[in-house]
Every structure is written in structure tokens, then in C-alpha cells.
Image (cartoon, rainbow, N blue to C red; front, side):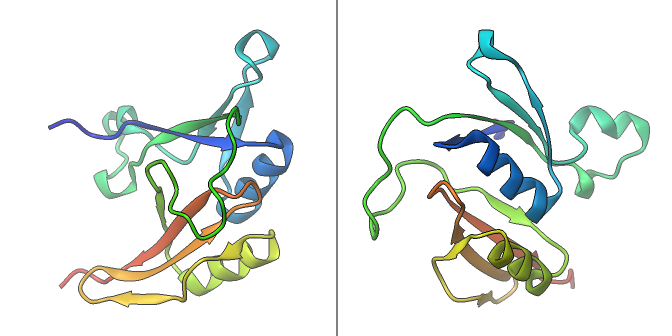
Length: 139
């Protein structure tokens, strides 16, 4: 099956966006330097290669990158012209508090999706929409 293996975040202010994702989700960043347009590699946690070292499948995710935005954002109220990433969290209320404190703008109320989990969507400091989900307990 073909899976998503990498994501990218567009940002007007790379330092501000990095600070946002570090403070909300604890992600780490590596700046690649001017020869790569200051592209930033994002590590969100263990990747699939870590499974050989004993990391459980449910702990594996994808990592990504961040780059300088080169086109205008869609106007407020319009859907994004991109995939929307949803980040799994263990306590959505704690992460809502972190997102609010870091300057995210709520785009929806907190929603209970039966059998799936509790979800909320935000705009980050760069105007990108992302979601958070606290998965429903497995039956």
C-alpha cells in the first residue's frame, strides 16, 4: 500500500513556526542551511526504521520538513489547498491549552467523533490549518 511518508509545513517566519511546533508538540528541527533554502527537517518521533530497535508500531509516525512559503495563503474562510495533518495526542485538553498559549487560532470546537476520538482544528502562527486528535480507546 502507498503510505504518506513525509509532510511539509509552509511558513512565512520559519523561526516563529519552529518555536510554535516545538512548544506545542515537542518536535525537534534541524536547519539544513542556506544551500538548501534553510529547509528544516522535522522529527516528530520514531520513524519506521526504529521498529527494528523495538519501537512499537503504534508509536511510529512520519517526520517532515518546513520551508519558506512561496505563495499567498488562502483568504480566511476558504479551505486550505493542501492536505491537512492531524496530530495524535494523549490528552486533547492539555494540547488545546498548549496550542492556545502558543498563539494558535481555533477553527472548530472540540468534537467527539464516535468510535474515532476527540478532534479539534486550529490555524498555526503561519495560518496553516492542522488538527489534533485524542484517539478513542480501543474496544
